[in-house]
Image 1 (cartoon, rainbow, N blue to C red):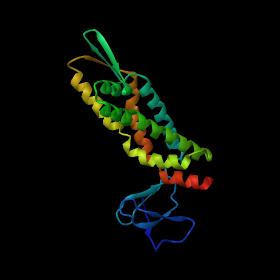
Image 2: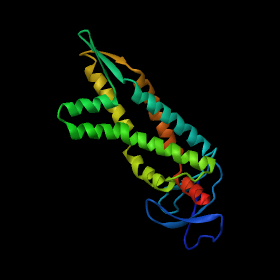
Image 3: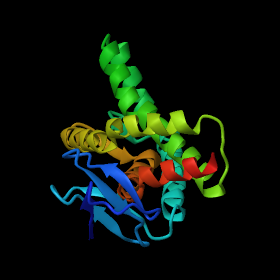
Length: 214
């Protein structure tokens, strides 16, 4: 972990850049970081940036894996309920449609947006931006999409939805036979892979790559 210097004591150099701490707004100099290195604020200790090992290859691989798992989780049923000889399968979209059919349209739309739309946009945009930065291509819409990505990331609440699924399974266990579907088997590792992408993806590096492509 590297402690950085607050301005105006910052060294004027091509190896340093001025950044503002997102926690305390202190303006300070951020040096070029070695692979695997990170820097924290000199005042509050918040992380200012990091340089993940492997550059963009690791987050790109994780983002691609997350996108594939996302497609599987939405293409197949999450679970099946067997009750009195009848089998009912459900998925993310199916759960949202069931709420809307019960005249809970705002709630159904919110569930679908949080569990399907926003995570899909986040993963798709992340993969698009990472591929462009890794290949050194200035593809259309990179800047606005990266801005949208930074705004949407806090709304991808897959972990909250997973908690709701587990609670529902516990409550329904005494009423019906629950058969775990392929969608849930893909959704569980999707949470871990998505967390990995968030933990090592450094938006600052992407902005710098886009600046270099101009």
